Length: 327
Image (cartoon, rainbow, N blue to C red):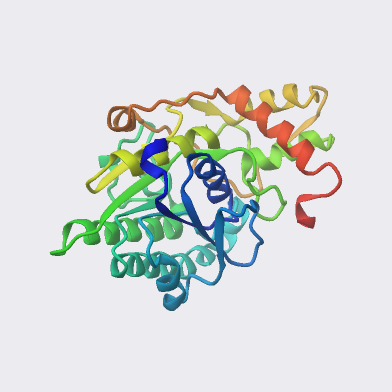
């Protein structure tokens, strides 16, 4: 991996976000020429090796500017949120994300970018009890995911067009992640997802501790470091159009996650209140990662308990003197 990225021009859109900031941290270790974009939020990582463009990717000219002389592009920029916004204001995910995705694909193609990696979502899969494989997409989505899933799926189809339906193709790679967690995630109450929200409540010793839903949800949680390793390998090793699930491959119930968080936060005495009236998402999502193991020679290394401990330690240090809403 070191030799592949050394002295290459790498663009990470969404450099001030969760995935983007963690990706940048890894790229700094391999001597890449790093270019990033940010929108309203300031970059999390500041280093003289990084060139950041503060711009709006809904503007095509901005996209053309940031793609100039880029070798490899990681499309991490996205308008994301937790269950509340996804349920109450799903259109927030539609037009801004589609505009950004299409603009960046067009600009990357015009600038002869060698590879374009798009971070999609496991929301594109149907509601099923079986571990979903890459070929299981049938455009039948869980109802609450309908808008965000179609946004991601539409962009996947456009990636396929750029790779397979034109005379001079651009190589695109589609990544469908599990439920990611770890340092630099969103921990503010408005946008945080399940693990960040519960982790913060546990650290702050909120008692009773409120849980949205009944805690029976089964998901695939993947620590961010494992995810970053996988997408770096995908960019290096995949030279044709490819869709890959990147997840832990280990389903776990939300109640198990809660139990681990309370133990690690030394808050076993917490009284749990399960609020079934609050917005929740798909009750079960299991993900098959055999193709990623085969194509990338990759497997997740960080167990849930270790990842949660790392995240708690990071949170306590990061927000020692302030709150997530203050930054």
